[in-house]
Amino acid sequence: MERRSCGVRHMCTLSLLLVSVCPLCCRASWMWLGVTSAGLPEQRGCSDLPLSHRQRDLCRKKPFLLPSIQDGAQLAIAECQSQFRHERWNCSTTEQPSVFGYELTSGTKETAFIYAVMAAGLVHAVTRSCSQGNMTECGCDTRLQGGGSPKEGWHWGGCSDQVQYGIWFSRKFIDNSVKNTSTSRGGYTLSTCNQHNSEAGRQAIVRTMSTHCRCHGISGSCALKTCWKTVAAFERVGVYLKEQYEDSVQVSDRSRRKTRRKDRHRLPVDMHQLIFFNKSPNYCVEDRRRGIAGTRGRRCNRTSTGSDSCVLLCCGRGYNTHLVRHVQRCECKFIWCCYVRCRRCESMNDMHTCK
Ligand SMILES: *[C@@H]1O[C@H](CO)[C@@H](O)[C@H](O)[C@H]1NC(C)=O
Ligand SMILES: *[C@@H]1O[C@H](CO)[C@@H](O)[C@H](O)[C@H]1NC(C)=O
Ligand SMILES: *[C@@H]1O[C@H](CO)[C@@H](O)[C@H](O)[C@H]1NC(C)=O
Ligand SMILES: *[C@@H]1O[C@H](CO)[C@@H](O)[C@H](O)[C@H]1NC(C)=O
Figure 1 (cartoon, rainbow, N blue to C red):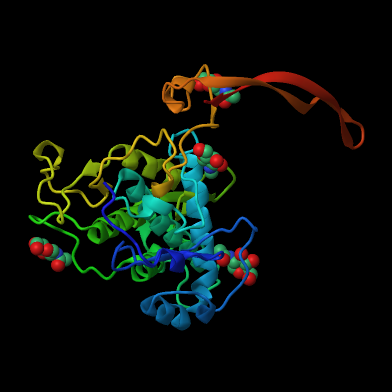
Figure 2: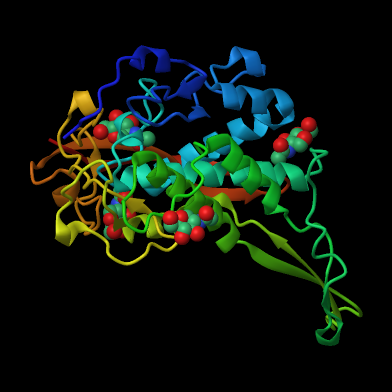
C-alpha cells in the first residue's frame, strides 16, 4: 500500500518547525510551524528555520508574517483535534517525520482535511492580523467602503475583514506552485490533490464569512445601520470543513493506471469539495510504520451511538471499565459581598477505555 519511501526522513525532525521535506519521494514539500510539547514556540528569524528556498525568500521579504504563520498552524491543529476528538483517527500530531506523520502523504480523506484546515488557518490568522492593524501591507477591506443600500437604510462601515491578502499569502506559502490543478483526463497527483484541498480550505474562510450590523438612530429605531463583514470564528470553519470531509470525493491517481472504475469520481470536482485518492485505513490497530496509533486505550462512551461509542471506537474489541473519582466545586453560594463559597463534591464515575 505505502509505495513511497523516504530516505531523508530524519531531515524532517525539528522541534519548533515541523517539516515534511521529502519533495522527491513524498512530494509534500511544504512545511508548517508546528506546536511543540514544550509550549509556546519561541520567536525565530527566517534563517533559523529550515524552509525551502522559495519559502525562505518569502519569509525574508515578509518577516512580519511569521507570527501569523505560527498562529495559523496552532489554530488549525487545535481545530483538527477538536473536530476529530471522537473519531478513531484523532488528528494526533507527532514530531516525526512531520506534524501529521503518515497522514500528510497518504492521499486519504484525512490528508485532505489536514491540507484544507492548515491553509484555512493561515488565511484566518493573517486576515485577523490585517484587521487589527498590525500590518502595513493589508488592513480593512476598502472595496466595500461607500457601498451599501441607503434606501434600505444600511451602508458598509467599520472594518470589514480583507481576506484577499491572507488568501494570496496562503497560496504563495503553501502551494507547490502547480499552476493548474484542474485535470480533465489525467487524474491527480498527490501534489495537485493537496493543492486543490488547500484551496478548498481557503474558500471555506470565504464561504463562512458573515455580515454584522450595528444600529444607529434614536434608540431602538434602527433607522440607519452600519454593516461589516468578518471571517467566522475558526471553530465554525472547522465544522464546515468536517462536513466537507464527510462528503469528500475520490478521484483517480494519475500515477496509478488502474483505479477501480467504480471508485472513480466521474463528474468534475467542485472547487469547494475535498478530494482524495486512497481509501483510508480503519485506524483500529497500531501500525508504527504508518504512524497509526490505533484506538487501544482511547476513552469511549458506552451510551453513545456515534463514533465515540465503545462499539465503534474500539472496533469490536471490547473495553475496560475503571472507576474514577471526580472532584468538583458544587452547591456554590454567593456571599454578600463579594465572594462565592462552594463545597467540594466527590463522585465516582465509570470510565471506559478500549481494549
Ligand atoms: C489520540 O489518540 C491517542 C491514542 O490512540 C492518544 O494517545 C492521543 O493523546 C490522542 N490525541 C489527541 C489529540 O486526543
Ligand atoms: C497585533 O499586535 C498586537 C501588539 O503587538 C498583538 O498583541 C496582537 O496579538 C496582534 N494581533 C494579531 C492578530 O497578530
Ligand atoms: C487548466 O487546464 C484545463 C485543461 O487542461 C483548462 O481547460 C483550463 O482552462 C486551465 N485553467 C487555467 C486556470 O489555466
Ligand atoms: C456519552 O454519550 C451520551 C449520548 O450521546 C451523552 O449524553 C453523554 O454526555 C456522553 N458521556 C460522556 C462522558 O461524554
